[in-house]
Image (tube, rainbow, N blue to C red; front, side):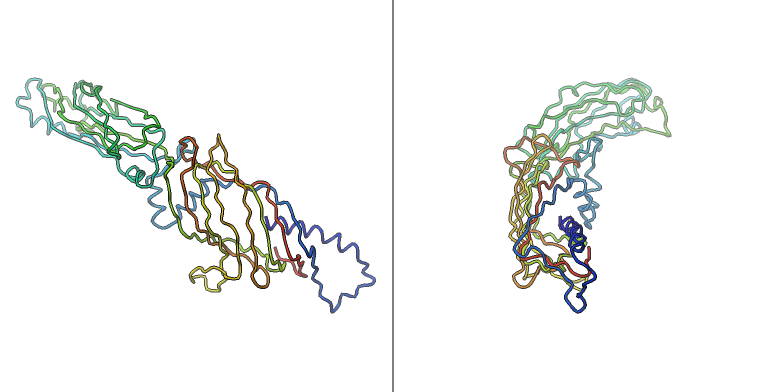
Length: 390
């Protein structure tokens, strides 16, 4: 916004210069700086953005430790949704081991096993603690059969959730199922959960497992060098949405950027007004903004400039692509003594909250915030220096 203002002032310079007759130039020895609008002036700055979650996520992934964790568990699907995925074994048994436990391998017989399970880990475990919930959650159970013959099986299967108050689901369809011959990731069961289910799947348990094995099962292995395991596993996927009680204080965040060369204009006060249109389903509470104090030591701790006061506490309401939220914002930057220096960065005190009155909405990298109808009101006059820097 400030750079647009500077461009407008530069465009005005030729007009000012055309009013002077150079035959009567007496500027030598005089101050060549020009001071305009000694009371105040308002300048429109237009629209900027949107600044999307895709950009913010890229910045967060650069944080040491956090970035690696997000890369491992947090993915972006083809629609741009932020999702976490997990897969793992529920039951994996070697055919040779099963055959060794059969009373008589010369005839078909039943092999039994008391209990086996698979647990969903990763980001799913953390959602409840962060007051986030899954959306568009899916679960599938798949099986691989290394034998050249069909194997009938059955078990008492249940799905449990991270929130113990959510009742477990009994999978009656797995009381009897068939693993097709030479099956590779054959789907035995799948479910798409309603968004009313606000907890992620914790695990899948099998009890009273029964395999009806053929005679001499080892001889029926399709490819002993390739696969000798009965393998039943799960695949889990879910998007992420903030709940109404979501609250995450981020504390002070330092944002350094290319210096805004406003010091040369000798501004004492600057009011910036704009509207923020948000399609992100998170309410952002900006409690305080401070200008960074200049330091010649890049390794020094970031400190606020006590001479620059910013009246800026505001709340950016959460919205969605279907229901964008618009928030009017006014930020006042003022030098307590002298003028506003070049701005090299800001220190933001921020907390994130769940939006009120908004349907459950998953996070998507295309969601973002747009600055609209921005304008800048400058007070105390603008000095155009002899050597203008942009």
